[in-house]
Image (cartoon, rainbow, N blue to C red):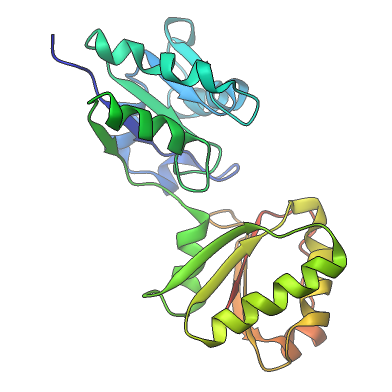
Length: 233
């Protein structure tokens, strides 16, 4: 029997209109899947209804993959592929498997000889880099920095040093900690260091600006509870 594929399916970042962010042909394909590996079942159900109000949610088998999923469970999520059925994966990150637990499932798919097909969609990391004006030839996404303030200052200085050597540095913080995190950044970085702040990407309140640190110190944006990527050059 021919194996099914694992499709990596895009999701909107927040409450933006699906048709404004994701191509229609991909949206039409998303609602055809009967097996979906998702980070959050509730938000995925809502997302599918935004695509098509008539979609039969009860006919879809959902498998939840997030930081709480036991490793031994993940392998079984691909069993439908062995029976010839396609499996789709949807992540809260917009694009599955990039800074996302979905990468484990992709790795297992390759080991089991299951074809993997990624679909285009919004990715805040890449879009922040695109909008920053910084070096896109050499860059590194560092995820979340440590919460220990003294260690974080050391970490920020290390990222600044690496950025000066030509590798663009991207990182993030939990939205409700963004404001304090930005203040720590501005207190630690050199005044001439270039910093891009990319918040609410693809949303109506989207904010992407690049300025030296001394500018930001006089023009501090409100980032509280806004999804945000910080980029250093």
